[in-house]
Structure formats: C-alpha cells, structure tokens
Length: 528
Image 1 (cartoon, rainbow, N blue to C red):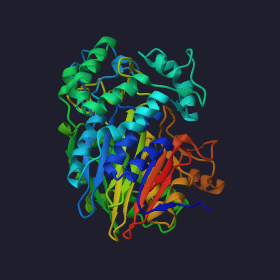
Image 2 (tube, rainbow, N blue to C red; image 1 turned 180 degrees about the vertical axis):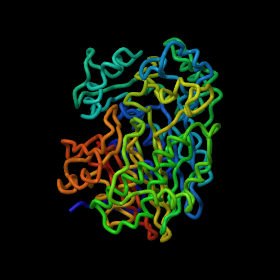
Image 3 (cartoon, rainbow, N blue to C red; image 1 turned 120 degrees about the vertical axis):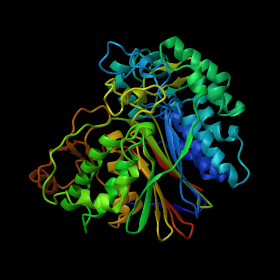
Image 4 (cartoon, rainbow, N blue to C red; image 1 turned 90 degrees about the horizontal axis):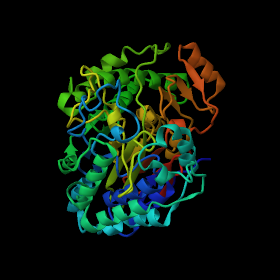
C-alpha cells in the first residue's frame, strides 16, 4: 500500500529532504507559501548543487485563493557581448566552461519578485530568517548524495577543467563519494550578504560588482552591466481548459505550452482506463504532436512566430487530436531538449500555493564556479543556435529556449494542485503522467508519482531518442507498444533517475493538504 501524506498547517515538497524541511520550518514559523519556497530554493541550491544553483534561472506560479495564478519569469537573457562574433569559428556554443556562461542568472531576481507579490499578504518574515538554513548548510556542510557523486563521475571529463569546478566539487581531483561532507564557505558568505543587504545586491550592489568582475576575468561575456539591467517579470500564464479543471503553466521561452497541449490532446482521445496500451500510447502520441508545435513556436517572447495560446483553443486541440492514430505510432524521433532541474511545491495554511522550478540547465550548468562568491553559473545559453536562421538563434538581450515549466491545476470542486518535475525533455511527459493518474484514473497522489514512468526522447545527456520504460511495466504491454510501431527501450532500473524527480501537492476545500515526493529522488514531503 502506498500512502499519501496529509496535513492541515501547510506543506512543502522538494527533491532533497533538507530543502523540504527548510520550507516547512518557515511555514511553522508563520511564513507564507512564497516565503517557504524562497527558503527551500536557497537551501536546495546548496544541498543539491548538481541540479541547480543561484547562478541559474527559475519560474513561478503563485496562487491565492479566489484569484488566478500569478506567473513569474525569472529567466535571464543573453549578455550584450554574447554575439555570434564572440563565438566566431565555432559550430555551436561550447556546453561547458566560461564561454558557456553567457546568460544572466535570473533565479535570485525571481525570489525577490515573488516576495514582492506576497508582501500584500501581511507581515513578512525577515530575509535572514528565510536564508538561514541555506547559509548553515553551506558553512557546516552537507552529505553528498548518491546522485551528485554518480553524476560528477559521469560528467567529469566535460567539467573538470571549468574554472573553479575542481576546487569546489572535487576531492583531491576526484568525484566525492556518497556521504562526503561538502562545505561551500564562499557560497555561504554570498547568501549571508544577500540576507543582510537584500536580494537586489546580486544585480545592482557590491555583490554584483564582484560577480561581474570574476565572470569577465574567467572569460564569460556576462558583465556587471548585464546584471544591472535584469529584472524578473510578471507574465500572463498559459492555460488549458479540461472538463473538470483549468491547468496553468508558463509561456515561452518555456516549454509550458507542450505540457498543456499534452493534457488537452489526451483528454480528447476518450481513454477510459489507465496503465494499459491506450493510456501510454495516447499520452506518447499526444507528446509527439505537442513537441512538434513546441519546436516551431517556443522561443524568446520578442520573436514568437505565433501566439502560443492559439494552440490551446478547443478547435486547435480538436484538429490535432484527430490526427492521432489510436493503434499506430507516429514515426519518431524529432529534436530533443536536454536539461537538469529541480521542482518544488508549497501550500500554506491559508491555501496559498506555489509551483516553482529552478535550474542551471545541464548538471552543474557551465561548471564554472566563481571562486570569490561560490556561485556555479548556468549554461542555459547553450540552447541558442549560432545559425542566424534558426528559431532560437543567438541574440544579445534575448532569452534562450527553456525546458523549465511548473504546472498548477485548479479544479472546479475547489482542489488546488501544484505539480512538476525535473528532467528536461521528460518534464511535460512526467507532468502528464502524474496529473492523469491522479485526476483521471483514481491513483492516490503518491501512487501517481511512484508508478512506473516513461520518457520519449532524451535527458541527462543521453543521445537516445527511444521510448524508454522503467522495468516495472508488464512485458506484454511493452510488446504491444512495439507491435504498434514504438521504438521501445526497457531500462534496467525499476526506479530510474532518467525519469526525473517529480512531486505534487493537493489542497482540498476542507483545508486538508496532500503531498507526494518522488522515491527516485533524495526528497521528502514536510508538513506542519
């Protein structure tokens, strides 16, 4: 029996237990869901450094009862010096090193903007309280997780020569073993300075001067002036109407459009039972159609070729769904998008809910760690193309394509469900699995997260574009999928990191909150 945890006083879920506890303790101290999320976001940037950092980006969905969700885009643009001339002689932007660190890190600006949204809710907890757990973990140290150790070893050839990486994350030049105590004193001092001087210091204060100076010194095109020009933005979320709920996500440059399209298309297929061929085939084929639209449409908001919302109308979804063959697979692959990330959710006692995602793109991002501040910088800008004709061609001041996309469902019966996952290409697919299992086919919330998952395409640096299945799927179902034309790869693991680290919360109208963390992660649900 798989049990879903329940509570009344507030709940935080995160893919690392220390981050979940940091958010929970803020809720216990009277903080709201946004304040809890900032505490969790700061903590997880310290304790799960292979998945995210304060040198990365973030996206928020914030819901206050009785009001539509507020969306925050905390994605940084390409630096003013990040031109095609800067990368002259190269076919692509290098994935690691200082030249891969070409976009502004937006996540701290997102924390700041979210706290401004929450300021209307009443007295605020002081920033030092919100960051205290992250500061403590940075100075005292944290036990290196199995996933951090394994990914450091796996990705070491590309990371070991990045500025500052070896000094920060290796032990005598070698990947740390699980359980090694990782201390990050420079990052702790940076977080303490942000707590004392305010989050804006990252962009327009003394800290910004030091960040910009070191980025320039190591060879990044990002400058202090790029930091000073950045501000996180409140944007209009995308939404898809289902038969009993409205689901929200972020607009471009995120792939939130594809996450919503999958749900809208799948609903039109009339699947009546979960877990069988019709269920998996229907979601996979819906994913293919959504990804094809994504590849044509999702780019910097300044140069969208079509309105993303136009693909979420009933008419557009009807037309695409009619093209899905219920018995045969559409030939694949198409282009895939990698990425590594964390998703977290929070709900407070008053029913305010947050769906939040934070990332450095690939594991450890660019691998570049600023030694003066301890900040590991993202490589999100490597998703830009150096082809001037490409949809996502590199242009200073423009935002790169983002795999990041947090979801939130508002049910007609009053339930609120923030949910999401890390996993690059797998994010919208896992979101669809969690939502449909819970909302359509009677799974408990924890069952929906724990159940065997699949991935069409690649993630975690994998080059394979097969339909990957965890080994817990029935062999007869696997064969039926193959017979229908799916190129299936059964993974050896029953619970594979390839499938990402998902989580979900649901608040019921009577105030009961349910939460589910992913057994594939180091995470937890923590409640008041």
